Image 1 (cartoon, rainbow, N blue to C red):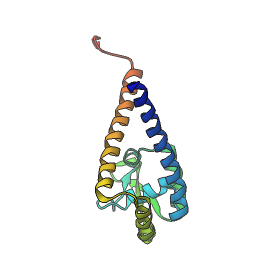
Image 2 (cartoon, one colour):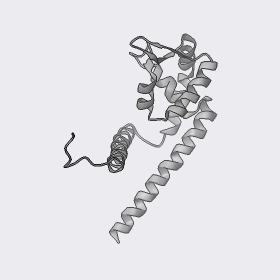
Image 3 (spheres, one colour):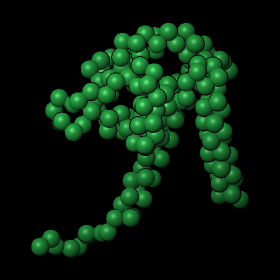
Image 4 (cartoon, rainbow, N blue to C red):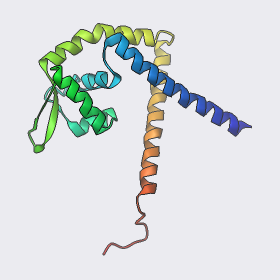
Length: 165
């Protein structure tokens, strides 16, 4: 019976994460006027140390999104003048994604709405509970990433016990 209870709790937890993600997507558009990916891109590009831009592939890895999804979001943000793609100084084929001055001003103008959104979204949690939730979500993310690694290892042909010639 304990195993069944564990599965039931796990199912409820993952379903609740799915629901929370969908609610977050709807509410960010409503409250701030950005999709969660647009919000994440602007936030990532506004970080200290990235004033000169970030490589497209590095941004894909940081945000954990598909190349196609990121490309579509970047195209929209480019049309709006918030980001620009510039040649990578070390690799002529690669591009750096850069937050424009207009994009930085736009991001800064959103900060009061964003902080209000955070306050409303976390209103039933105290500071210590918020820190604990972040801790547990970090652990969950690490475990989920490990699943992908296990799946990747299982899909690749095993070379164990073979000699390269």
